[in-house]
Length: 216
Image (cartoon, rainbow, N blue to C red; front, side, top):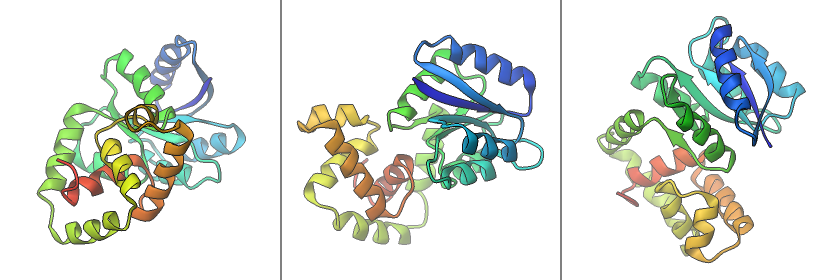
C-alpha cells in the first residue's frame, strides 16, 4: 500500500482528494492536514510515503512545508498541488525537494498515476510546467553548465547510463529492464548519483543533466 497524506487548507479539496485516492486499492490515506505545520507533525506521527501538498496555505505555506517534510529522518515524497500555474511556484517547489508538480484541475487518473510514479521513485510534472521549466534551464546562465559537466564527469560510465535514462523520466523498473540490472542495483546507483550531483531528487538530477547538455 502507498501511504499518503493530503495537505490543503480547503476541507472540500481534502475530501475530494481523499475520495479519489481511497478509490485506488493500492493507496491508503493515513493523514490529512490543513496547513504546513500540521503536515510536518502528521508526517512525524505517521509513516507517509507520498504527501500531496497545496502551495498557498495560511501559516506555513506548501513550499516551506515541502522543505520541512523532506528534511525529516524518514521523509515522504512530495507532490505539490496548486490552482496557480506560476513559474515561481514550480521552481520553488522543486528546489524545496518536491518530486512532482500538478495543477488541481489535472485529470483524476493523472493524479493517481503521479502518486504511483512518485512512490516508485520517479517524478511527475504537469506538462506545461515541465515545458517551461526545461525552457528556462536551457536558456539559463551558462556558468552552471561548467559545474554540471564536472559533476557528471565524475560519475562512472554505468552511473551515466542510469542518469541518462533517469533524465528521460524512466522509472527504476524501466531502467533495470533497459540496462539488464536488478531494480535494487538501480536504486543504489540513483542514490549515489544524487549524492554525487549534490541534489535531493530525480527532478533536480534531470535538470542538471539537461543544463550540462548531457541529454536533450
